[in-house]
Image (cartoon, helix red, strand yellow):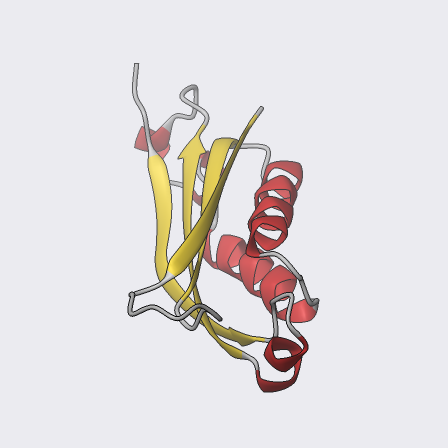
Length: 121
């Protein structure tokens, strides 16, 4: 049995997500990771677009959701992206979406806070 994944790493989007009013006004850059596990019955040896998932379409889906609406919680953004990927891409068996927020409204020095959501069929 084979396993195959498509990974989109460190996608950077400017958005205005966050619970605080200042976050809605100022906005910031977020980073998004997506790991889509493909259906193990796919015949990847065919080497055709029909035998896999188009990663450009996957990226466009993530971008449209993440930049097209405002979320109070990054967990909600990750969940909406994951749910939509499973809905639109029937060859995806499971998907993990991580949203990283580098500028958190907390008195700390850190790389980012993140929320991760995994959805499966």
